[in-house]
Amino acid sequence: MISKVSSQLNSHFVAFSGETTPTPKKKKYDKDTLLKDNIGTNARISFDKLTNAATVYTAKGLTGNKNANFYEFLTLGTIPYLVGSAVLMGVFNYASKYFDAASKGKALKYGNKMALGVIFYALAKELAKPLINKPVQLMTGVDTNLPYAKVIYELPDDKDDTDITSIEYHKVFESVEFPRWDLLYCDEAKGEKRNAYYDKVAKKLGLGENLKDSDQEVKPRIKEIATKSIAVNNIVPYLWATTGVALAMQKPWENFFPKMTLKFWKFNEVKDSLYAFKTCFKDSAKELYKGGANTSKHAKTIGKIAVFTPIVATILGVIDIVNSSKKVQHANTDNVIDKNRKYVSS
Image (cartoon, rainbow, N blue to C red; front, side):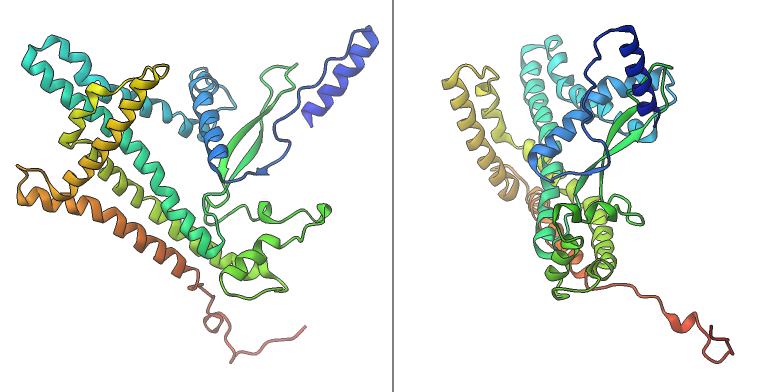
């Protein structure tokens, strides 16, 4: 409303003064908008959050801006996470120049593995989420990772400020008690069936087709799926991340680092580096599972546990989530209404 009034006043003033009216800046979103859950969208969201955290949110927080909020505070956590990762990756490598030749070689080997472990930790943690969410979506029709763009109307920082909106990225089911059901209804003005999404979920869950109120039928089941998914996603990805770190600590990677190159313009070197990565990855996975020549029996057992634990946890987690869609809590009206007491009908 403030933006609209200010825009109209500016237009009248410009017209009176004889100046050319500036073209208004087109807004990215004019209302809360459901987004597609795909690689492109998730990459763009991650990039927007990172750049905003490094620039806009940091500035707002340090200056005590009245529009700084809890979402921006949480997003700022990305910065120390990345800085801490960089420190872990470089701590042995940067200090190795102060060591003697023998110690320098050992420090570099360990430092390179630690750097690879940081990368594998982050990759495994993120790649584990689709291993949970996609099977659940295929079997139930519910995408618990569905994102949306939320439009926030801020207080103006200046009396002439007209750009008073910001965009936050959330998940439809991030609040189990208050999911954004409204975003899942289709637009009837575009010729779409209002309950099309809920009809699809109802069919996937075996509740039938052409239900009169499919949204009311499936909402309790969707909430159960979302609740279980949040619990599983808070545990299982870290098991995969642990396995990623264990994989990076294996000896075969020592053959990869001498061939590793970041000179992407040198095709042959990049090709050799990728081949070496493939070979070392395969050999490291075998060593983690079976153990090396000097690996103790106890260490071999731990390696097998590190491999199988996230796999089993993922499978059991998906099964539990899917089964939860069949367990819907209903209120026990027998404990609410006393049928022996007198009442007056309306």
